[in-house]
Length: 456
Image (spheres, helix red, strand yellow):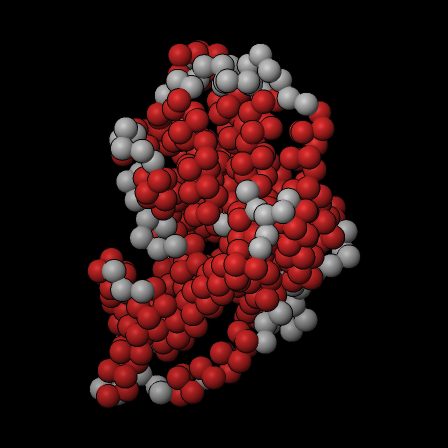
């Protein structure tokens, strides 16, 4: 029966590649296999009887309430044109430097990632705003597109990332299950706040590596990154403060309240949502029609997330009913290299799945299956969560299937070829892999700060 679970997983991949909606593909395939199993006596229908309790658990999960709130914050800031003012001010600030526009795009991507946490919106916004400007001022199409894709995907790892919220909830359940399997009936917990704090140093390190790479290209290939249009103009201090201070205060209010222990991630998300509304009002970028559009987009994105979660819950339930979790456990525990071999194999699988599945599906489908097994081996949950986030970020950048490449291709002018986009992201993929290797070699990069802040 265990191999039926593998067949079911493969069937879901095929159905998704055909183009069916993710949530219905997951739930529909699982139900089809379950009903066939019941009809032929190979599946216990009692597993399906636990589904109402699972759905009630999703509905009553306060941690997941942070998702629509963070989405609302991100969509509001996007509609408030925060990126435009940030890009103008930082371009003027770094305009005297060769490659200053590229560095500005990276920093704006970092701030947008910390403000919105929505990868697709960040890549599209940066592509529409900065790509024409970079090309107009003589930037190599490869450098321009690579920089935008890399900066846009920082929303995967820099808090308050949506993926960290979802990963935090899934890993919390997986960590509790792993400890119960070991006979620990008063288990430790891992929270979304732990992941937020753990991802801070690796996320900022990635930004530094991006900037160092761009500075190196500007030094050794000056023709690819000329001086920007603000080279002789500079920027007024008050204009810079007006552009930078509001989003920085919002980030500080959200992340600072979590790190200081003043608010849970859900409460901090509420602060961020209200703060984004206030910021949009101060910028006079909010009207009744725009607020309606913001709320509709928030409902659309949040509904997609929760519908996928429901479909993934049905899938994982049927997968376990067929003994798929036992098969995966036996496979991972018998790999050479012990815990290292198991983690490497899981990371490789997630990297490849990132070509065809979004991070939401991978988080809800794969992590609940492999998470308890890896955590039983003594893997730190915060380190594992940050590794998964960076790994998926790398997958989203990697040609030819990276999601970020498709997002940018959709808004890039025809003068920019798909080959330019693919070749442009290769150095950034190498940087991502280097960062992943450093995190694997030095787990303290993810675990040190949570130990200081929370005493983990």
